[in-house]
Image (cartoon, rainbow, N blue to C red):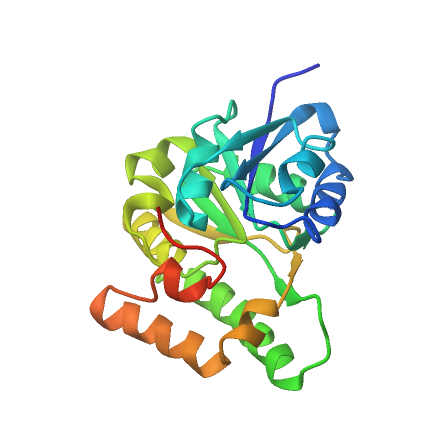
Length: 238
């Protein structure tokens, strides 16, 4: 076994229907499996999420707080590598995702990165267009040095991640937007075509798209977006 090149963190809460497919995709990469670790940060799920994750992940850690941001940051505290990658428990990565993550963050001055975004479900034209716009926005925002990258496709160097307090610095749905903007103030972010992901659009079906867009605008203007309690109706913040 050589040097561990990356630590991939997957936050999860009651994701027994999705997490197996997510972890299988993470396990089938162009980078040898023993060169990166998979950490599932389980937010005290009440279903079979943790037991399923243990079959595929190197570590399953239990986070007592119910938010993706706290889950990601808690999982990162258990990471051995200096390269951190974050996806969601309902996200399927391309087989070059880990390779793109490692290559991009090995470049001088690059401290964080993302890649192309798609939705898994293709049954809604409006949602399909929303994800095309989201992917374009991610690429353009990085190019114009106002980086806004999603937590379900997020790579970052560990040193800078913890220097800024991780995703847990604020407790709202826009914690990924907040962190990427703050990272942009201390270093350079990049977009890698190898880091393509497909993610579930079920949250966009639960909450109308225009509310997601208003939430982003609200955060950009006032620094505050939806709380996780408002976004996820299946839990209450502890």
